Structure formats: structure tokens, C-alpha cells
Length: 371
Length: 104
Image 1 (cartoon, rainbow over the protein chains, first blue to last red):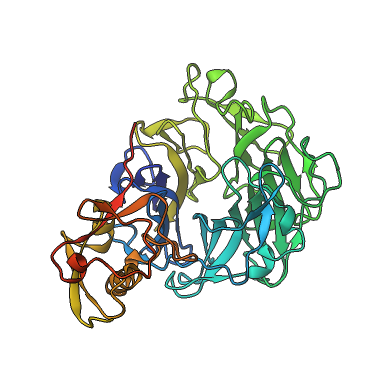
Image 2: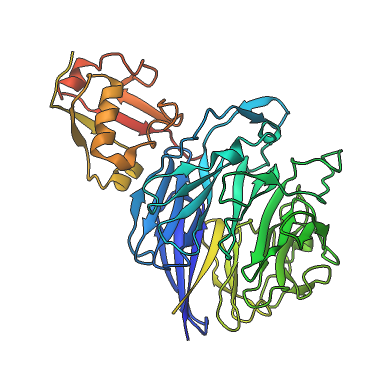
């Protein structure tokens, strides 16, 4: 049958939502780390009891927490994210040089095979790896040292490395996305990197062939087809069929192609989810009605999934890491909002129910499928 | 001047006490120079989880939303290598780490 555990990071703590395979009733535990911003929690695919959590706030900076018992207890591990070389400068919002400075961990991506190996995407943008369960961190510095990095700029949320995709085939391929620099790809486990942004178009970048500078909000792929990538860019939903060598727009009939979220169905590689948001100025759903949009054709043709979701007076946002799917059959889908709701669907998005309605603003949602 | 082993008293904000599993005021032995830097080094050596939470990991400077007080005196802008006040070194007064007020 299986169970699911949903890891929810919020502005004021972490919550763990648990249910059986029917996903009809939920146990809600938390808040863990009350009062702290929990940008992201993620469990190891190799050992779901191992969970990493990014705990931070403006007063006390970054703390990294690790659980070895599925979130019942936690241990603070290393928060030493020292850049491996003199960090230099990137561009500030006004184009002037700005010193590179660590601010926080936006995203953890545990190894697919080893619970002690985990990647951390941080602000200011860099990629770190731990091979000892978070007790020490080493920067994969070639990314930050890329020849283009002086031209990277922060998005509105900061200059963050927020998305990390690992190659299930174990070829050492890694894709990361940075706001606002774009996608970078490594084929050698992070030793070398190259931009993977051909085909992206951004109005604020007058050169259509520009190598970096795109505000990529999220990227996703299906583990059985890692070379097929989907992207929610600042504007535009994009698809690559060649591992990021080239991209084409698949926004199709979406009511807005602005948004933060993109995710792929666990059993159907051509089924993709986004949550359209009105614009970069109006961070709420078009028309005040919340809807997830699903494409079963790998983009271009999209259907609105609205059953159970508020269709009027709804002005929340869904942030980039706040959407997830479990691996049960049928697959469950989950997302959290800046209004503190976490919605769950036990039928792949056809219908939704709120598991909780009044959490602090939700920053991240991850789903674990348990035996 | 060093006072190896002399305990100094430190008061931390609630969030850091909770993080470090400290019930109330904490006393740590100064093993190095009796300076603000020496005091915080000793604190972090005793409670490694506090590393980076009071001082920035990279710059070793006080995090901007925190203040340091001894009695009524704001010592936030003291040079970290200046001698600590005698009242702290002797244990008569605690060294207070205070978080800036959050709210409206």
C-alpha cells in the first residue's frame, strides 16, 4: 500500500504531514524550529528516514538540520559554507559590481544512492556538496568561477542557486538553475560547467543569443528520461529534449506563462504541472482563482485543474519549491501557498483538498513515498 | 594577559539557547585572550552549533541584527580584540548577546 510524508518548509517553521496510501486523512506534526525560516527540507531517496533541513533567519544566519528518524528528532550539522576561493563580485541590480556573500541555503538535493551525500544550492549562488551527512561542506567551485559569473545578477529573491537535478544514470551529470543567470550543466560531477540556455528569450535581455542572465525559476525532469527537461522561466514555460543544449517554448494555452513551479508526473514523463501566476508584478493567480495546469503532452496543450481549489478572491503565490508529487498509484500531488494552505490531490491533480489552511507562508513542499 | 580557565558568564537570545540546548545563562572558560573574540571563540568551542550564528562565518564579524551589552553599555562596536570589561572577566556581570527587536 505505502504511505506518504509531506515535508513543508514555512516562514516560521517546518511541518510534517503524514498519511496512508488513501491520502484522505492527515496527521500534522510541527512546527519544528518554530520562528525560523525553513527554506527547504528534503529526504534521501536512498534512506527516506534521512532528511536535511535548511533553517535560517536574518538574526542568526544559517543552520543545517539533519534527521535520521524521518523528522521526529533533529541534529544540527555544519553550517560552514565557505567559498573555496576568493569570491569576487557579481552584478548588483543596477549593474554595478557587488561582492559575493553567502546568505542561506535555498535547496538541498540528496544523492540518489547515498544518504550521506547531499548537494546544497546557496545564495549568493554556489553549489556545495557534503559526503558525510552534512558534517562538512565542500564547494564545487568551478561553477561560481565560471567565466560568466561576473555578469550574474540577483533576481528579486536574491542571487540563489535554487534547482539541482541529478542524473539517475549515474554519469556524473548535474543541472543547476540560478536566478538570474540561467541553467548550467556539468557532465563530470561538477568539475566543469557550461551554460545551457540556448533558446531562452528574456525581454530584459536585448541580445537574444545571450549566454547567461535569464531568470530561470525552476527546472524538472523525469528520472527515466533525464535528458528531457522542463523549465518555468520568469516568463515562458520551456522544454529541452537534449539535456539543455537547446530549449523551445511550450507555454501553449496557459492563461499566463509567468510562474515559479514546474514538475513532472512520476509515472508519466510527458505529464507536466505548472501553477500560472499573473505576472512578475502581480504575484497571484490570474483572476483571483487558483488553478494548477497540467499538460499530458509534454507542454503546449494544458488543462486547468480547479476542483477543490478557490476560484475567487484568492491572491496567494506558489513558490518554486512548493509543489511536489508522490510515487503512489495514482500519484498524489501537493502544493503550498504563501497564504499558508497546503493542498493535496490523491488523483494526480484532478481534485484537491486542503490538508491545512493556516500555516505560515509556505516556502517548500516535498513528498516522500514510504513503504 | 590571559586568564586560562576563568569562567565568564554569557546571556544568549532564546533562539540560540534553544538551538544549543542551554537552559539559561551559560558559563564558559576563557582559554585564550580575555577579549570579545576570545569569549566568542570559547563559547563556540563549547557549543559548536553556535558557530556562524553570532559572528558571520566568513568575516568573523558580529551579525548585523545582534548587539552586545555589558550592563547598560552597548559594546557592539568595540574592537573584538580589545580587553573585555573587568566585570565580565571577573564573572561579576554577564556578557549579553541581544537580538534586535522584531515586530511593528
